[in-house]
Image (cartoon, rainbow, N blue to C red; front, side, top):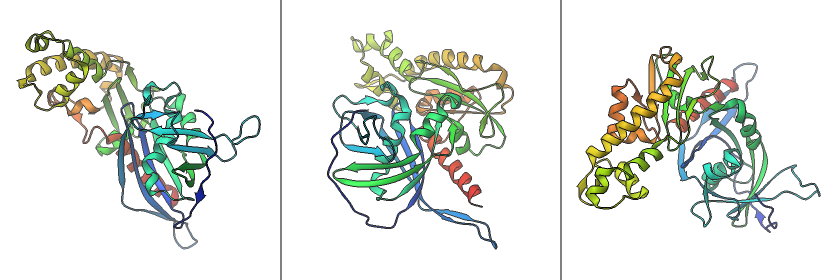
Length: 349
């Protein structure tokens, strides 16, 4: 992040301040935010407190971020430089020249979780509003404190000369994946989640909303996700002999993403199935091996991630004993929001 010249802007309060509840999942490929207006009623001597929620809004944007674009500028109340000057940062989210995927930025998701949240909610926020935010991380021991610090404070945002002072509070950072489990309303306390991500394969055993004893963080295989399947399919001899050239990565991705697996008038379904099964046998076998002592403890096994949308992958997972979650691309953020509502209702009493 860099310091920028202060903008001249006019603050306009056009409505009473509003409190929002929000969940955010700043993923490697997409940023997902779910939010709703929240109204709290304090407890009295005669009755317990309560909380009600407005209509839920779900927004998804690509995880393309820039630290050198002044689409927004913002500062945090109380944070100044060593010289006593207010620290002003800038950011842009979208396909700007030089934009990077969140996973490729050197400063990590904690730097981008707040900008991503405000970007998705901007049109519904007014100067003086507040947000109670929930998010999730793969490794709570390593990143929970960092995420909380990034999401707690009073911040002044400026976009197109419009100023909005927003108070953000984050008391809880959940384990990533527990939202996907919650979204399925499982009948058991012990549940296993397999996450087939774009870059990383993860598997985690849960007891309720927490990882099981003996598992400090989800078991992971780095750089073994669907990006590897796409690369392997692009190099498939059968495919390249049919096309009489090497398929590009983007072409390979378009074939795999297309439910019919058609490309240039050719049906590549059989080749996709063979490559997908070869990939699944390797990565699922490896990740299950890392967590083999937990498998027997979990009667329910769920699968999530974008790869679950590929028909032959979905069928293979079902044959392996996994239940594909509903809406695998958004199950975690939706489930975290459901958990957030329940926790806020509990806290209000």
